[in-house]
Image (cartoon, rainbow, N blue to C red):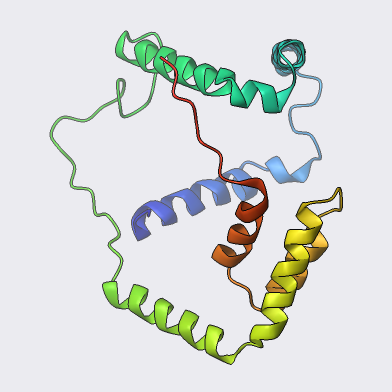
Length: 185
């Protein structure tokens, strides 16, 4: 969790950009910038290439199941870290524009009482809801998950009956199972 000071700094940065610089005074402040357009075109070309490659290997589900997506994420993260360490990529405050000496970081620590209060509130909700309505909504969700129906209306019905996120995910897990990531090296 960000500290109160870091959250305030982020807010002030957004306020300066939004109110002092005047970025919000126009629909597209960078319109007509050939550089921005060239960057956009480059990103579009790369994305279309990735999509074509994913289609060639059987689609997104196949790519996930075969570990392609995870491999790409790992390779990208590794390359990014190598660039930082080799000073080929500037990360302000990490490998450039650093200050000497350690700055104390005031991390936000959650009060354990908050967690206990939340657990108690959950128990109260579970005791006060209509258990039959919850069970029916979750059963309807399971049935819909076995068909081609849009699951969103069934999920919303379960939420309105005060089914918990865990119960909703459990109902879907009963039908679809649980994804097991394949670690590839």
